[in-house]
Structures are given as C-alpha cells and as structure tokens.
Image (cartoon, rainbow, N blue to C red; front, side, top):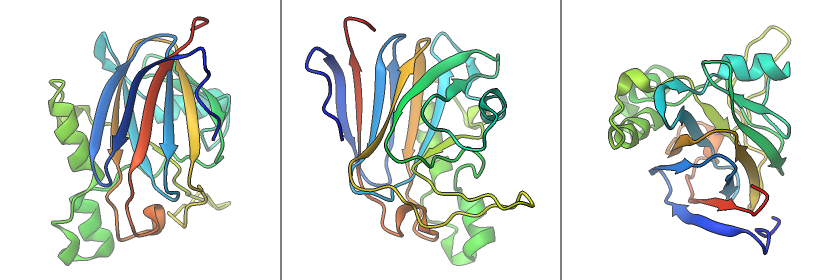
Length: 211
C-alpha cells in the first residue's frame, strides 16, 4: 500500500470495526481511501450528494458510463442525475462489484435458512447509519461492494465467491462534488465475501494543495 503523500493533509483517519457501519462527508477535491486491512473483506458502500440526498449513487449509470461490469481505476462513480460523484484513481485489487447488492436479514433467511434470520446484515447497518443523517429505508438503494468478488457468467448469472483482496489492498476516489459516504463493513458469515470471518477496515480522507 502506498503511503499518503507527504504534502497531504489528513482530514480523517478511522478504523471501522468488523461488522460495523460508518459515515462521513467527503468534500469536492478530497480523496477517500478505503483499505482492506486484513484481506477478503467486503465493504458495502453508498454515496449521496451532500447538498441533496435525493441525488445518490446509481450502479446502473456507473456501469453504463464505463461500459464494464466492474468498478476499477478510471471508473466515474455516477449519480442518479447522471453526474460524476467521484473518480476512482487507485485500485490495487481489481475486483469490485456493483450488481449483487447488500445482504439483509430477509435475504439471509431465503439463501441460508431460517436460523440466520436474526444475524446482523448490511442493510441493517445502512439503516442505523442513514438515520444519523435523517435518511430512512426508502433511501437505501443498490450499493457498491468494494473488494467483493462476483463473477458473471456468459448467461448473466452471478454469485459471490472467495475474495481475492490481500491485506493492505486499497482503493482511492477523488470527490467531484461534496458527497456523504455510508459504509457497512459487511458482517456476512454465510458466504465467502468476507472469508467467513469479518475484519476491520481503515478509511482515510485527505486533501492536497492540488485538490
């Protein structure tokens, strides 16, 4: 993992515990770094325009704009209004999904059995964190899954398989507008998106004189 540039000013440097939610605002020109500290940890993420939460991340527009099924270096993270929210400028992993969505108590029950109904899930994390900003379940839209490996076969079917991210793998995105970022450090233990063992991540927001 490359060090933060010496000339940069670190605005925030946080460790997000395993299974926990997190949120912060990234100002235009600032860089958001998300680090998979231990490897094989899915990081479910949502973005909202900070001045109008009605404008939020659009997976469909993001994939359409780049003409590819996965998010990586050079991807423009697009909003529901067709505007670029952030640009991904660094990706040391190479596999980030925006099709499989977030786990929930309901989907756990359907996929893994009734005994999993009460396990914590990403949708619940999003709801907890969204409420801090006056958002509700109506605002939880299909999300981006950093470090989650979801192969798509020629027929269009996909499934979650073992992650390929290594300890210290990271992504960086430069904000093109002020954005609110919501993260669920995925608590899933029933599929291999977290190697069946959720771990902490690191989130850093920094700015440079050029930002």
